[in-house]
Image (cartoon, rainbow, N blue to C red; front, top):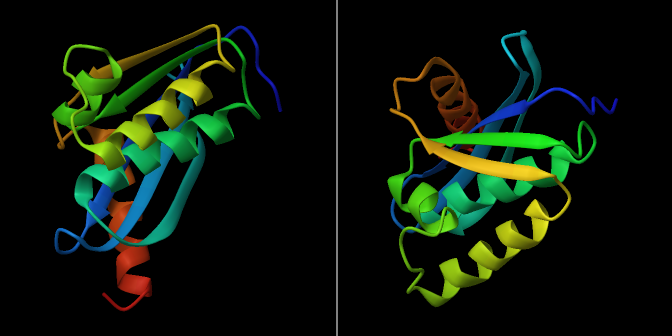
Length: 141
């Protein structure tokens, strides 16, 4: 399914129980104001919350290539992630720098990628958060 003319909206979240601790990611895809197109989640093993947030975006962008090569809007409740990938804040941490580079490489598949910080209470970020917690619950954490 490749929809070229619509904007793909991606709502992401990463979670870590402990910091570092067992971690997961989740994301929700939407086209414009239509319903959800895809929900996905995954277990990351032991890592930090910030790394989990980055992994959520990486996995989402990689999956987004199946849907579009046009405009992607990413929404996250992580100020750190949004400000770093938008170029407003420097990435000082070496591990986050590797993930940042991975995000930038993944962006090349699209005409345009933008990042917006939203509150955790955002309806779709909240759904991504629930996906993360479901994974951690299923893994026994």
